[in-house]
Image (cartoon, rainbow, N blue to C red):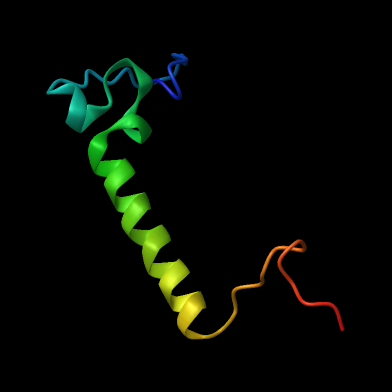
Length: 66
């Protein structure tokens, strides 16, 4: 399967068929809308979890000096 648009040779040659928004087209599965949506959901989940646990650190230019 192509990885980020670069095809690789292997013992198994997959023939992926379907709509590009599902398969990722020539860029591979990581470019599909499904993969992007799953990563976005996981990212929002972990950001909210860190925020609720008060583990978000302010940037240097926003922090108060001791």
